[in-house]
Length: 125
Image (cartoon, rainbow, N blue to C red; front, side):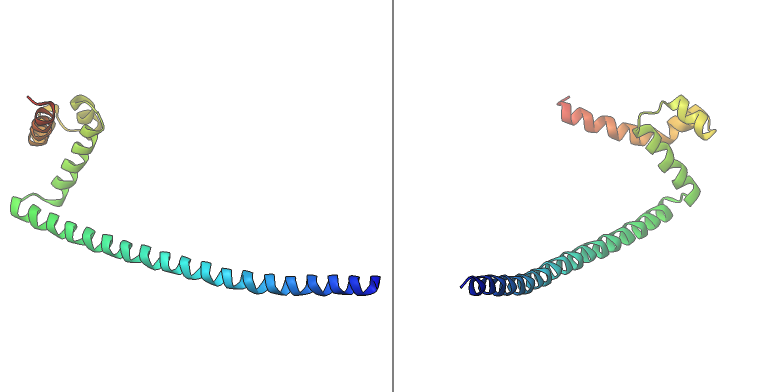
């Protein structure tokens, strides 16, 4: 009688192990499908963003051609504006870029004026 009970328990354990294996295998397939779906969605989003970036770059080139500034001038202006927005003073920007301070003020004047107008609207002045 004890042997039968032990055999039945071992058989049940083996069946449960096999059942668990197939259930885990099915769960792994489901998880992989979800992961693949998320991956494809992310890749589509990345492709859309890259397409939008290319359009923006082309628009920037068109605008630069219409305005008549060179790539070097645009790069300098971008760097100056970045430094200014990060809180650098005109004097420190001038020394960092080896440009006279009044030239930096002239280059950034339109952008500083736009920034101040925006804050006036926000503050209600």
